[in-house]
Length: 275
Ligand SMILES: [Zn+2]
Image (cartoon, rainbow, N blue to C red; front, side):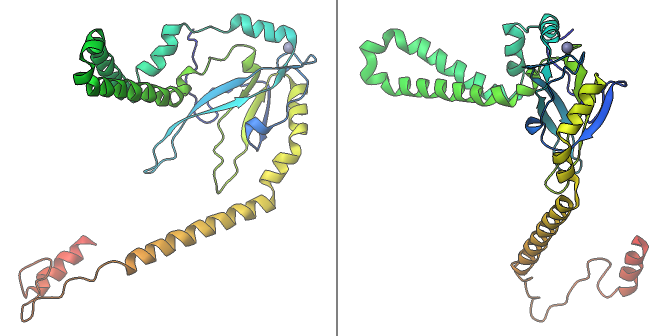
């Protein structure tokens, strides 16, 4: 079993059984009942359940990974069981998630070059500082750029370090949320304990109704029309600002795009054949 999760897509991989429900709203802002989703006992310990999803909007928009995290409450014995099951990744496994990423190539290049320069310069630095101070400065700059690149690559590869689910966290499972600026999509939840599932639905009922109600729908339609109007205005502006085509040479003859000069029939027939 791997310590890190494999990305899911949409509602793929959700348990077939359990209490299935749809709730709209950001998962981080939802309310969780004091009932254990696994066994239904009184619960008071929040357990962070992050999941990684692969999404692909289609068209020219590139896909990517996103992490969603639920924070339901679990009972003491289920928390203990979860901790016993959870695999602790080793340092090498953690570092590998960033080291085998294209984002880290500039970091490795600049850092190793900077460290190599420091390795050559530092033993003689005191005696030759007047002549080599600028090389030392470059070496320190390269090391700085390398460390900064690592700091950028680390959060960008966070999705690779999302822990795998245990039999306890699977008791509160959920799918991806495709909510966008123009449409609210409820997220699917599958909760093993039916009483906990029903309580979770009741707690977030008002938020769900608000985000899927007519007011929200008209707000989203308004946003769509505003965005569409802006796009059309930009297209018209671009068309108006386009430079006029160059005037034909005085006395010259214009040449049709297809067919020899004067061969109107050939041009028409070629254009016609395209339809
Ligand atoms: Zn429990």
